[in-house]
Image (cartoon, rainbow, N blue to C red; front, side, top):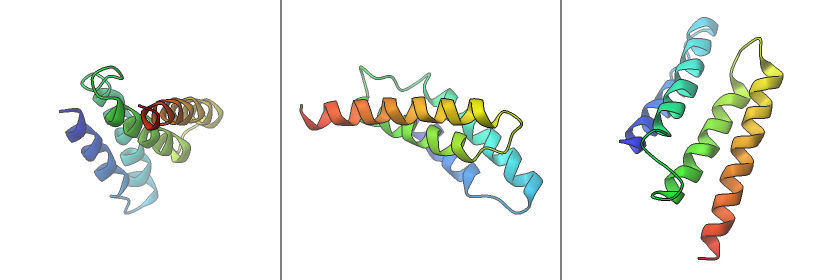
Length: 92
């Protein structure tokens, strides 16, 4: 179920047609990634969790919003979490 949410979020990111639609799709993508974390957690699905964190970081980084600094800080946290999990998976 979480992988489906991840794919839906990525689809939202690839829809842009005009500026308003792009902003709406970016926002929907972030919300959908957040929803995916309700189905995919670090302990049960570490690879998918890392992928979601990375994709969330990508979506947040380009999200058109008045909260640019907050979104970019949240993106950095997501990227760091993805990197931390991915590095642990390499050594398992």
